Amino acid sequence: MIELEGLTKRYGDTTAVDDLSFTVRPGHVTGFLGPNGSGKSTTMRMILGLDEPTAGEARVHGRRYAELPWPLREVGALLDAEAFHPGRSAFHHLLALAQTNGIPRSRVDEVLELVGLVGVARKRAGTFSLGMGQRLGLAAALLGDPGVLILDEPINGLDPDGIIWARRLLRQLAAEGRTVFVSSHLISEMALTADRIVVIGKGRLIIETSVSELVARSSTHVKVRTPDDERLWRALTEAGARVRRDDDGSLAVEGMDAGAIAELAAARHLVLHELATNVASLEDAYLELTHGSVEYRGTEPHAPSATAGAHDRSSR
Image (cartoon, rainbow, N blue to C red; front, top):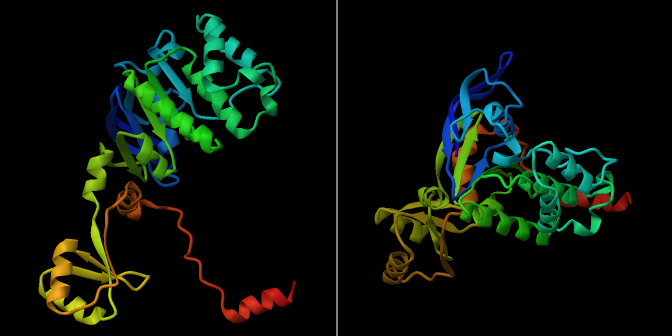
């Protein structure tokens, strides 16, 4: 179990983490989400004792990380996919970690096989791709067979097969009763991997809940397309529904289900070209929650004009 109470980190006048409190429990994959600059990596570093909190405390199994007698046996961490000496082989990188933490040499072979690096175990880690480096980082995190795993963007750089493998591995580890705490910017992947979600923004807790509860909080609407949208709009609003026009020209209706909309349209002799219920996704729910916490936001791209396109083609 990981417990945070009032965890705060300031760098001069900048507050990176602000009075953060939540609990990561065993038996679940808990996703850690937030916009760039929200304080996720800083939070993980404070849990692992790499950064000293300005205030508050982070505990693993009731103790600070620095108080753990054999940290690698209790907490496995992956914060940097290149946290190894580039001239050392994958095998010797893991062997050094094992020997300094009282872990038997046989465990090195076990984790190399688990992450699929047996065939390159004697090659210099500096020649590895980002995905192979991630696998080596996961091997190091699992080396001590820990009950707690703290992983920062562990699927970054993995190919599709590797992402599926990592997803199954994390869920298996949680099913064994371990505490699995994973940060990611890939919301769609967290929807497939995580059971619970912690969302922060600008260093503050936004929500701590299950994935299913978070999605249920987000709005579900019915998408309607008709050649007589003005009449349908009036009929829907008169019936108490909330209606807005989406960018593709369709109507998004809240407060009335698809069946009721179909019956209303039939009663008014209105033709419907499309009628579909759009259920909110984890991504929709996340964007709603973090809309006011995004610090780095680009402008919306504009479609090039016909003359601009002609100019571009003529200049080639």
